[in-house]
Amino acid sequence: MRHVIIGNGPAGVIAAETLRAQRPQDDITLVGAEPEPPYSRMAIPYLLIGDIEEQGTYLRKGADHFAGLRITLRHAAARSIDTQARTVALSDGGTLAYDRLLLATGASPASPPIPGIDQPGVLTCWTLADARKIAASAQQGARVLQLGAGFIGCIIMEAIAARGAALTVVEMGDRVVPRMMPPGAAALIKRWCEAKGVRILTGAKAARIDRDATGLHVHLEGGETLDVDVVISATGVRPQIGFLKGSGIATETGILVDDRMQTSVADIYAAGDCVEAAEFGTGKRFVNAIQLNAADQARIAALNMAGRPTRSQGALAINVLDTFGLISSSFGQWQGVEGGDHTELSDEGAFKYLRLEFDGDMLVGATSLGLTEHVGVIRGLIQSRVRLGKWKARLMHDPTQVMAAYLACAQAAA
Image 1 (spheres, rainbow, N blue to C red):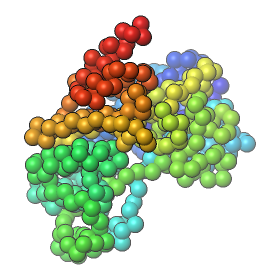
Image 2 (cartoon, rainbow, N blue to C red; image 1 turned 30 degrees about the horizontal axis):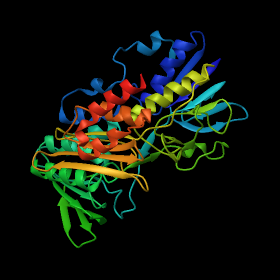
Image 3 (cartoon, one colour; image 1 turned 90 degrees about the vertical axis):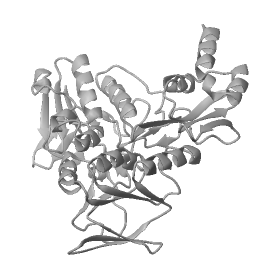
């Protein structure tokens, strides 16, 4: 049987290795659009800081790893899919025939509609090629403006500042990481970053970008003009699904999949950042571009491709962020549910914050900042859908008692 996997990021690699373990004799081809070996985008900040070399970003360190597993690597982008002929047309002019196909094409940077965003000196931070350009431009003393203080923006913020650049961040939302953190936690992250020397403007938006011999000039809607050497656009990503036009594969924001990670077309599966899958707890479709979910979806897709029926419980929203050493995380329905209760604990001086969200007596979401010891327990309580009973009142009074609640509920269940 011929398996073709489009996309060689973490989801594609995990799927290929899972398939090989299940189907020792099948033909497996892993296709990636970039010239480098499969690598992790999440490692790029460490590359920019100087903690690792480019080889340190590679997902598998052995040069013969994939050859040893008899997984064929192909460097090309998918141009189109013919679901009737069961073929994939590639950017290098080649065509791959498949019996079962996995789409793991990930996402690509979303370019904001700002006049001048295509000026030289305006960069993204998504690929190794991007990282090389940033390393050459954002050096000691360089004036750098970063557009966006979302999840991606806060990941690369430390790397840019560590290079000795003078960094200003412009975020159009009312707070940093608005899709990950409630206002209380976001305010602490902003204050923490500012204490590290980063200027952050929230509720601000770039109106246009000009360039002359002196550098780039970013004009904000409020009237301020920022004169900089480099602009880094980190305003989010969108699923990379344009090549599916005319294929008959159902898409909305991302590729629609069922609980087996199968698309609307038989024998075609999808996993990772390009997918719009059911959310754990609500069943609503959403795009959750998080590597942990991508890995789980890849494993489930590969098992089904190998003929082992496996179903997903739904993707749990999981966000974990390290910003200048301050660890924050949010899980599940961290923004709360209609009619639900919540409890909040904040120690602003110590940069510690904990918020729990309840639906009845079930924990359905949480936000934590500066408190890492019980993050796994919080996730376990959410995913197990355990009824807390009297422990809900105790947690409402003291949310730090999550470990005691977990152990008590586990003992009662046993």
